[in-house]
Amino acid sequence: GNTDLAGMAAAIEVAFAERERPTLVIVRTTIGFGSPNKQDTAEAHGAPLGAGHAVAFALLGVELAVVVAIATLFSAFTTPLLATLFAGGVWIVGNLTRSLRDLGAESGVGFVRQLTSLMYGVLPDLASFNLSLEAAHGLPVAASDLWLPALYGSAYTAIVLVCAVSIFERRDFK
Image 1 (spheres, rainbow, N blue to C red):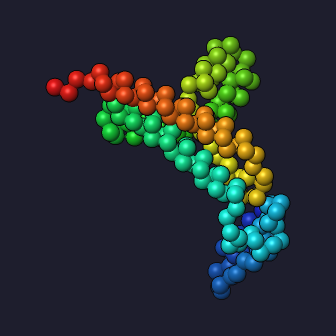
Image 2 (cartoon, rainbow, N blue to C red):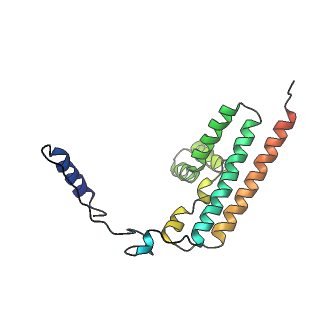
Image 3 (cartoon, rainbow, N blue to C red):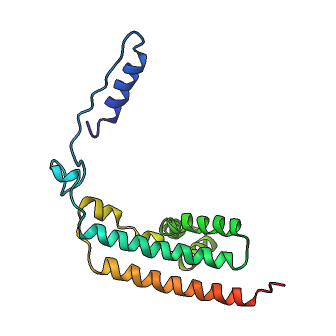
């Protein structure tokens, strides 16, 4: 079923080994498995979106604004292709900044701790905008889970755009 991965792997191996006739692997699952509010209910499929989904979508919009601001900053001093690659790199690292901070904190090397702490402070914490787990499982979302990341994202976007405008104003287009 849902958690017997070894049994599923064995059934698939048996199916692949059968060369004479078609084989069907039947896996019995639990609808909404792992979701505390949806497991074993029809709401796991096709239920209307709730307030948690609206909050998650709103924060995705804030995350998008941060990433677009970063892309705008890079486009102020480099080519469009490089700006896209740099912004994509910041998006990837921005989703991993908490792990990077934690990894640095566990390091025995002082320089690594300081560097990862600095990177965590400078790079955007894009994981703070991700409430997809709460939305998918119908978990409660506190008001601060919306307004704190929204405030952080708005401030980060504004600072990055001010830097982009400052750089762009100094460019010589001759």
